[in-house]
Image 1: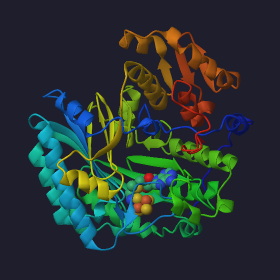
Image 2 (image 1 turned 90 degrees about the vertical axis):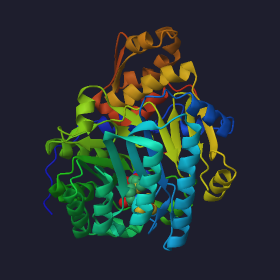
Image 3 (image 1 turned 60 degrees about the horizontal axis):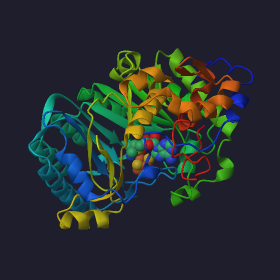
Image 4 (image 1 turned 30 degrees about the horizontal axis):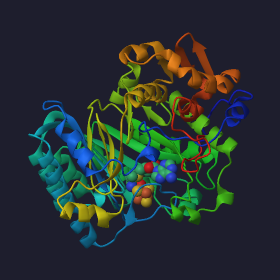
Amino acid sequence: MTRAKVASIPEGVIDRVLKHDGRAPRYTSYPTAVQFSTDVGPAEYCDWLVALPQDKAVSLYVHVPFCTRLCWYCGCNTRVVNRPEPIGEYVRYLLREVELVARKLDGRRPASGLHLGGGTPNTLTVEELQAVFGALGREFAFTDDMEIAAELDPASLTKSWVDAAGALGLNRASLGVQTLDPKVQAAVNRNETFEQIDECVAALRSIRVRSLNLDLMYGLPHQTTQSVLDTIDAILAFRPERLALFGYAHVPWMKSHQKLIAESALPGPAERLEQALMAEEKLIGEGYVSIGLDHFALPHDELARAKADHRLRRNFQGYTTDSAGTLIGFGASAIGALPGGYVQNHTQELPWRQAIDRGEAPIARGVAISEDDRFRAEIIERLMCDFAVDLEAVCGRHQTRSPAELSGAIEKLQPFLDDRLVGIDGSYIQVLPAGRPLVRSISACFDTYFQPEALRHSRAV
Ligand SMILES: C[S@@+](CC[C@H](N)C(=O)[O-])C[C@H]1O[C@@H](n2cnc3c(N)ncnc32)[C@H](O)[C@@H]1O
Ligand code: SF4
C-alpha cells in the first residue's frame, strides 16, 4: 500500500483538545437513552401512535440482533447464532410485532424510510427477508422514493442475498470494514480481506445501490495512524459515497466481551485524536466532505447536500437526511422516536416475545419529551450537525423559551471559549475547527440531565 501524505496537525491542538476530554453522550437523541425509564411503557406508546397525524410519512427501523461472528470491540445489541431456528423464531415474532403495532395506528401510514440494522441483517434468509418486507408493505404504504438501507457484514454476505434485497428495493447499503490491518483484525477477532470487501461492493453496485457506505474504525488495539491511513488508501478504490469513521468506544462494564481486548494495546487519547484528525485530513484531500463528528460523503451524495443546506439530522442511526418526524422501531432493543417521546423495546428476546404473546407493544422503557427538552434537543442537534447554532433563531421557533434560560449553559462553555475551541458572537455559537472533536462535550453544556462522571458514556475523544 502507498504511504499517505498528510500535513501535520497544528502545534498545541492535541493538548488543547485533550485538556477537555471527558465522558459524554453521543446525542443520537435528546433526552438520551440514559433518561429512559419504565415511566413510559406500552400504554404511553399506544397513545403516541394514535396521535400521529394521518398523512405524514413515518420511517421504519427493524433490528436484527444476530451475527455469525463476535467482533470483540462490538458495542451493538447482538449475539452469535449459527443455527437457523432462533432466527426463524425471531422473524415469526417480528411479523406479529409489525401487525400488532400497525393495528394501534388508525389506517395505513405512508413510510418514506426503512432501515435494517443490527447485528447483521444479512443473517436473515432470503425468505425471511421477503417475509419482513411483505409484512411491512401490508401495513405501511411504501412511498415511491423510499430510502431502504441495510447494515451488512461482508463475512456472511452473498450475491443471492444482495440480489433478493435489490429486488425488494434496497437502495442504500452500509458494509462493515473497520480495518484491513491483519494485526488489528487478529486483536479484535475479525478477519477480512480486501478481496472479500471487493466482492461485496461489486454485488451491491450491480443492484445499483445509490449510496454505499463503508464503516471504518480508529482507536482499536494495535491501531496506528499509518494503519488507519493504509485502510483508507485501500478502500478509496471503491469510491464509496459515504464513509463512517467511528472511534472505538471501550465500555467493558457494559459489553463484557470487550474484556477480551488487551487494554495495554489500545492507543492512548493523543494517538486516537491523531488518528481521527489525520484520517479526516486525508479524506478531505480525496474530495470527501466531512459530516459532523464521524461521517464523510462525496459532494453529490444526499448527506453532503443536506449538510450544505443545513438539513442534516441526527437520529439513532447517526447522521441522516431522514426528515420524517416519526421512527417506528421493530425487534428486540429497537428504539422508536415519536413527537410525544422516545421508546425502546425490551432488549432481551424473552420479555420481547412475552409482550407480543400478550398482544402488547413490547416496550420496556422510554421518555416523554417536554417543551424544554424539545428546545434543547434542537440546540444540541444543530451543534452536532452544523457545529454551530443561532440561539435567537432557535428561541424564535420555540416561542415560550428565551436565551436568558441558557445562561447556565453559556457559563459551562467558558472553559471551551478560553481555549479557543468555541466562539460566541451575540447569540451565535460556533464550535471552532480545533473544538470539533469535543462537540459531544460542548453539546453537553446544554443538557440539563448530564452528569459529567456518569460511567455509562464512552470518552468524547
Ligand atoms: C451493526 S454493525 C455493522 C454491520 C455488520 N454487523 C458488520 O459488522 O459488518 C455497526 C457498526 O458499528 C460500529 N461499532 C461497533 N461497535 C463499536 C464500538 N464499540 N465503538 C465504535 N463503533 C462500533 C462498527 O463500525 C460497525 O460496523
Ligand atoms: S461488528 Fe457487526 S458483525 Fe461484528 S459483532 Fe458487531 S454487529 Fe456483529
